[in-house]
Length: 444
Ligand SMILES: Cc1cc2nc3c(=O)[nH]c(=O)nc-3n(C[C@H](O)[C@H](O)[C@H](O)COP(=O)(O)OP(=O)(O)OC[C@H]3O[C@@H](n4cnc5c(N)ncnc54)[C@H](O)[C@@H]3O)c2cc1C
Ligand code: SF4
Image 1 (cartoon, rainbow, N blue to C red):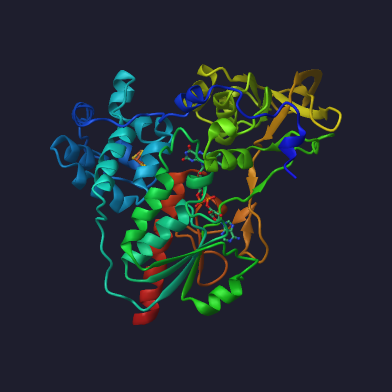
Image 2 (image 1 turned 45 degrees about the vertical axis):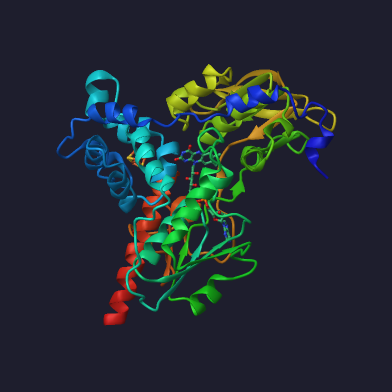
């Protein structure tokens, strides 16, 4: 039974359909040809450009911007995609304000960086609109590699391996590929079914067989994959969601933010998606901010994020926080939930203020709520995985795990930020190391 149907306050159609559609429109509309030339013209084409070093996939940013400035956006796209095959999605979702654009010389000098993300989108969109796939496969190596997880890490790994002449079987437990690009990224960042279109475009390289609905641990085991393939890459992401662990947290109306966002991303009609009147989101990361802002855009009247530490310590960037606040989301800091009240379904949430060291202060308050989202972190799920470091799969700098012949990357692997662009970098680098290792074995 659909739990949401049991909660009186969680209903569809809280706002006019046209207003909902306007709210979910493209966050950064694409640049037209003239705007792209003007934006490119602001680049100083720095030698040893700090932006390129700040990009986790080390795109040659001055080069691609120069290629745009000289009227060759397809060449610019090739420069981008040779380092980052999901350059189209990264252009939409990278927190550029804390990556490449943060260190742009013009940001430092004038407080206004070159719009690297939007220029990247201009170049990659131009190439994709021409339905061109700019890479070809090397001669077949005869090697078969299993890539488990078709999120950004798995896709980047699979594409690079296919380019180097290997045959790849890409498995994913979900019905659609793309990982959080398809099921997690905020809808206003990835409009017009971009995630699916990008995967389709990426697969044009050939040599990648997609097997959807195949789960490691249910349909295949690590042992069976090792026996059948020459190498295995795990890009499993973080499928589990942390529980609140407070009295009453099983009441109807309390759910996890990631599932809400996945439902939203898959909804064909956003106006038909139920949302509460008084929504409370617990957490301080990108997931919390996205769940809160998207609830507001669906028509929730009061949306409050409650975070246990100070606002400066929120994992969501200041830009993301401001985006939500500008749309009416309230952020309360230094408070932790202590109880969920209500008769069967949530009615109120009780919090206690916390000191900087998270110690409870004894001062409590309550917020009315008919819908509560947990966004307090995700966890790796699954048995029989390689050795863990903390709560993730332990890997070395090139993605090698404790099990010979098994690599891992992206959110499920130790080290790195949990960002799309980092997952792409780790998938790509693991593919390079898998290739080097297999070629060494073949030649040695
Ligand atoms: C709500 C939300 C919003 C975000 N917004 C942004 C953003 O704006 N910008 C940004 O840079 N980052 C953002 N992120 C983070 C970003 O989405 C992740 O860092 C990135 O997707 C990680 O890629 P991945 O390939 O490691 O994992 P995932 O994208 O999670 O993909 C993992 C894939 O593995 C599959 N899988 C899992 N277990 C199994 C199994 N046992 N067998 C087979 N397949 C399996 C899953 O179905 C999934 O398709 C966001 C994350 C969330 C949750
Ligand atoms: S991939 Fe992301 S961080 Fe790298 S240059 Fe592009 S927008 Fe900036």
